[in-house]
Length: 431
Image 1 (cartoon, helix red, strand yellow):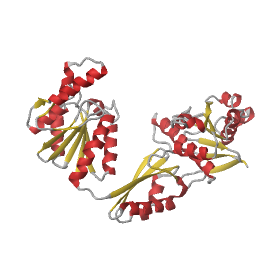
Image 2 (image 1 turned 180 degrees about the vertical axis):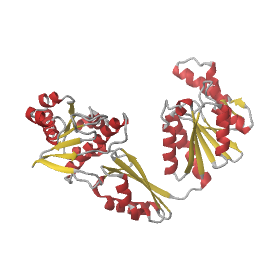
Image 3 (image 1 turned 90 degrees about the vertical axis):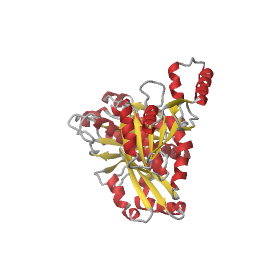
Image 4 (image 1 turned 120 degrees about the vertical axis):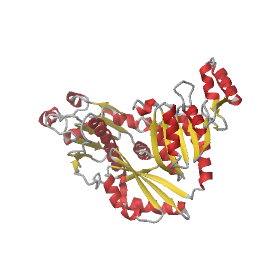
């Protein structure tokens, strides 16, 4: 089955809103073996929507649209589908009653404009919306089916999972497949792909690489006889080829892995941050229950605060400045001691977009200290992502990932060195 996506809305077309619905739909459909061949964004213009739907059905078996099903005058998707089908809009009594009931339950007065959500193309099927008011629509046109979903993300996802995906699977008679996503940190996408060349060559196995700053997710898809059994074998081989850079599976994020490892050791961590400005602390407090293993943190952005709050030697700071491996190590020791944690983690560096005191953008030092030792990972230069203000955000995110990965390796007793294909030096500051 071939499906095209059509997301509707001026706010998407003009970049005011990120098109998260298309990204989610693409992932979800791929997980269920449905081939997405094209994704298009159009504005709130009825003629444009009609043309886009008709064009899509010349190539695809089905079209999934999102947006334009609300009550306002710029919500014209239902009008466009009626035009494409050559029918009129009709008022659905059951939908009209539901609007009254929901308004009464919420203690609100129902506005006349709201009744637009009870109008549907004549002959269209309704897709139950258990999460909201406007239903989805199923409209059969020459060439295929159009599934029109609301633009509100949680409503769209609910209808998709409860109604559309099961229907598509039944129509397409999709083969049995099994999927799993493995997560890696601190390794280049090209290195991952090179190491997994033999897996790429396996019959019935497809790998997709999903890179983020300093992370690469690997989606494994296995089709054919006994896909679950083969998936287990492929998973094992991927882990053998990549080694300990694989830190998690599916939604097991790096911060969750760190918290689990700390909990298993009845340990805590405290964080001292400079260039990341609290991002590591935010990451480590995202998970409910994180207070059991996260002691706290200090954002010592100013050089003087590194000395006054963390106890970094003023002689060291005067001689080398704030961006130095020994400073990272001292920051880690200082925050651990002052907050009474088992482990200390610290970062200092230059996020850009300009050099600092002659130190180039991308220079980052990460220190970790625990019951046994203190060491810093020296990154002479993290890869600088182009030019402009985006450098800063990406480098800061990369630093968060590398810091948490270093802590994970410390907790597991692994070598901090990772064969990533870039320059890296692991320094033992204290044995």
